[in-house]
Image (cartoon, rainbow, N blue to C red; front, side, top):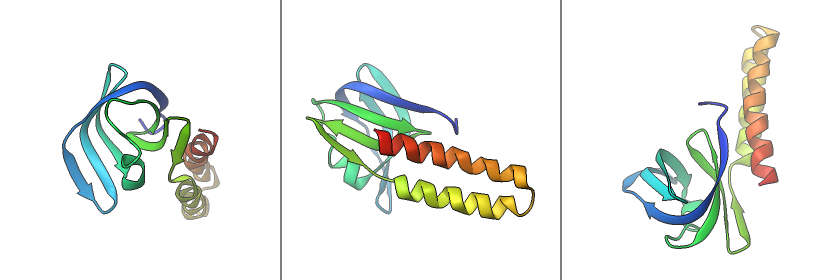
Length: 117
């Protein structure tokens, strides 16, 4: 879902196999805190922070991991990119029909979630 956003807490038990696309890893499955999330994408810088067997929190927005908190250390990625997408959507769709520019709030909301994590 494009609006979905969750903070998942628990012990990271498994990061499944996946494929790399640039600096982004698409894991077949990530198991944390007894929950299983399939097809989630995570940037390399955040994947480096994730270790199996450790207690952590993950910020998951629309099948992407944008934040990792482990051992009191928080790693975040993608907030500025989300604001860029918001600007692009507002300009690209706003000149066609002004209410379509409201779609940029999806990216603004996601950026705020990353900043506040």
